[in-house]
Length: 92
Length: 119
Image 1 (cartoon, each protein chain N blue to C red):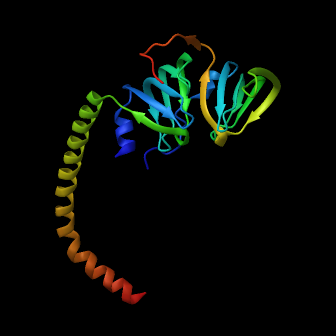
Image 2: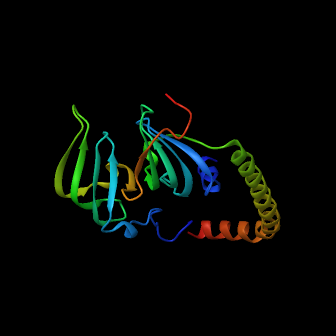
């Protein structure tokens, strides 16, 4: 009714061949180079590294990976990602 | 109301908290019926509130959102827009319906009953 085709609100074609950070339900976090995607947000990433938190924060490499869309909670490009000091008043 | 409020809030700043406790302060770029959103110029904070990141752009799945906080100024502006839109919609529909209802009342009733009995 609103639109004839459902277009994803995120245009992933601009991230192809760029490194992106993806978080999943379950708390896992991964970065990789986007190679392919579909409407359901299933992704194919290459040179994937997982940022493991338990028990020690370390990185394990996974190579070429297929990420299932339904489990993805967050997606952002690594480019432009920077750690900063507290920009607000201290929050708990 | 919720999704229309969100749609009306495009380009406005807001705070999003996810079920895992992370918070995102940014400007809403787009949203869809699943409440998936894309934000721009985002300040991300982790659940503990001890680490911060600045992210140019991010996409957040609606199913992971705990809540969204919207500035009060935005709330008032959107409320006005909505009441105006509703009144405009109602007055337009009201005039149409009254016109069509009267016209349809006769022919449709007769036609439906006739066809129903025939079938």
